[in-house]
Image 1: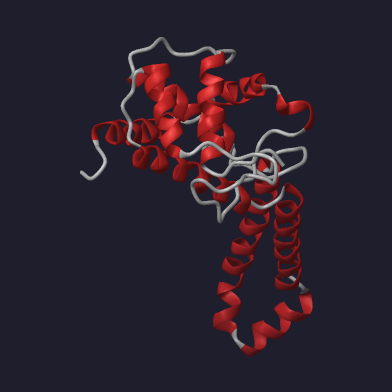
Image 2: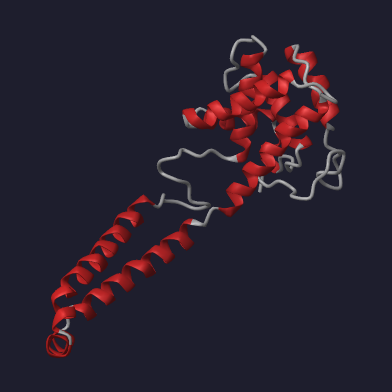
Length: 228
């Protein structure tokens, strides 16, 4: 899978048996050459760690099928509990055995009914299709799109014109940062560097809050020097 990141990858390790990924020092030199940005390797590494964290968040998301199954079980359990709460034998026995509890019984029924309705509503929020489910409100983006967004922020902070999704220079920087952070290289038909185009498009879907957090992180890393 192209979005996988080797969890135990260390800078200078191999992404696979055939390709040595660039080091963070090499990415630092690339940023200087392409954007005129002075960012020490230790700070580039910090950006790489953001990508590792983004991958872990992606991997921890439940699959759509698993999420649907769990919510469905919750809904069915709530409906079953509802049926039991309003069954005539239970209500008649309770009226005699615990009149005080019998008076409060409709409150319990209303609670389980609300739970069943909430589960029904939650099922409608599960995205259709395959793969990992994403939040319908947080507008989370994939790890590769996060990498693309970091590159866009680097362009902006360098004073360069923001790159369009087809910008080859942006693709080159994104690929280098991705591989240095432990991201697996493209495979098959996706080996063309232009494959980054869709992730630069996806990066535009990031929420303003997420974008601002990344921008602040990049700004701090530009101001910190090795050994500071």
